[in-house]
Image 1 (cartoon, rainbow, N blue to C red):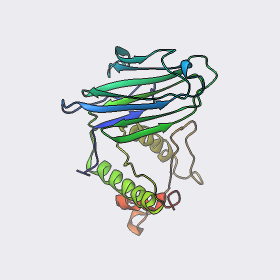
Image 2: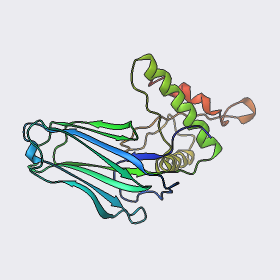
Image 3: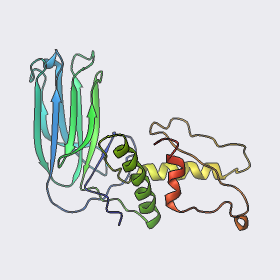
Image 4: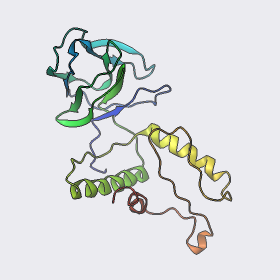
Length: 229
């Protein structure tokens, strides 16, 4: 085990969402804190439970309707949730944009801090998320987070370790297979339309000469050092 927390995951709603597995039945505290702009009455938000198999909203957990808030009002809500998938949607009902801010936390750990959005913005929150990981997966996650931790501490930033995303891992593997179909192509081609961004490297050659081998996971530092410096 990497020792990384696996009690929750945050993701943007997408079509063809990955199969999710959950563990435990302990309730988890979700905290939603927000501050409205000068048009506070236009701010509304909902939290629904979501069927993990069909990705459809089921039960309404909480709703703050239009005309709930005053201008520049700060408000927080704490909810105890059992393992499962939930969808938080914040809206500006007039549609000209909200210039307030919001913070989403789980068990006092901040997941996201956001500000401006135009019409609406949604996040899927996975409580009790328990991803299936192989030894290699755990090695890469641990190496990645150790590098992130060093960078955040060096620059006085709050460090939040990443969690494993089966969907991102499958997407990356699929593109790697595309690249492997023609190793003789000069350079390396980035996949188009990848909103998460990507880091790519190419290792080609005779394995007997030390090329084309599967490097230890800690070699991830060689790539991340180009980003976290």
